[in-house]
Length: 234
Picture 1: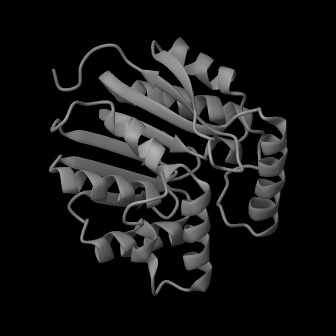
Picture 2: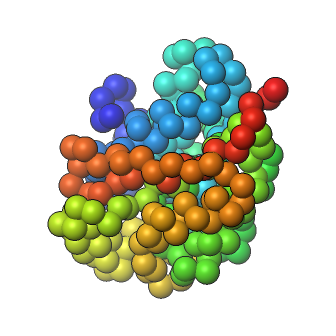
């Protein structure tokens, strides 16, 4: 999951703080596994439009676009974030990677929501930065943005094993609350229980599954995935 040509190389020259942050994010998060889930929405060679909501520095989009460029698949990644500085950083990395035709990144406001039609919406480590009512609105809007065969992938933190849950809660209180490395529309919210997220997706007509992604990581990573019945671009 951490192997391959790492997208962090495109952030060289952006300053030590950014360089350190993206390296830590890459090595502590299952970006490869999340990207693989996103591409599972369509068969080989089928074009794919991915909305990365809360993309931060754009690591997921960079990785996904590079991998799929090598396979010849036509992939468009649209990244959004609250933090204008991260959007600028992501755009610089996209330009350095020569992926401008595949990736766009824009700033959104705290009340903006995903709008379709798109094939896949990824919400990667975003919900805990929001108050519970905003969490629900975002997840339901993500479900409404996809068409038949589409996916919503909410990469969240599980509640077990408990030692991993305690470690990540302390880590996020420090990095977000003390270091302010992530923009947030609210005070730092709770990690939403995965069954609650799955329930919101199911309410919107999606078939849900929960996939552990924590093997080899100190954090209890998991994905709550919702799939709409049908076939993409049928």
